[in-house]
Image (cartoon, rainbow, N blue to C red; front, side, top):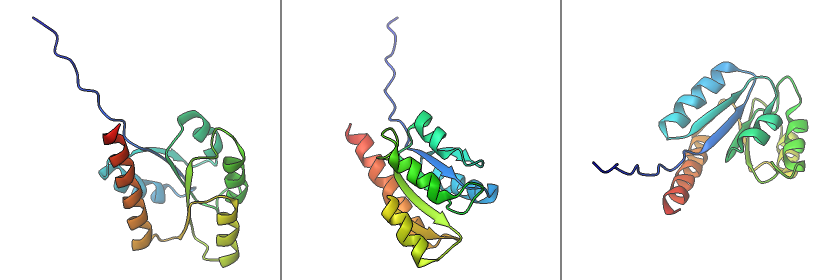
Length: 137
């Protein structure tokens, strides 16, 4: 009997969530998992090391956590292995100066907690675009 070849499955997009609030991570895990994404959670400001190891397509980064998120963002965008990863900042501060700094440091988008419809729309569009790219490959 001949072996049946397995169909190559397209990998799910990997999204790294760096936030010191486990409830935020759980909520995003549910949403992203429902959309077919694979989640890596970071509660301890190890986002740079995790990004180097797992090469996610997207990082959702809280700026206000144990380690200053601006520093983490600068490190992510300053390293060759992580600089091209998209970063959505999701934070509790609506300070326009902080927003400008994050965008200047290389964040793709800046959103304020609790996330609103605009965040979910952008995230959904991002995941949909990634899914389309994977199915074309």
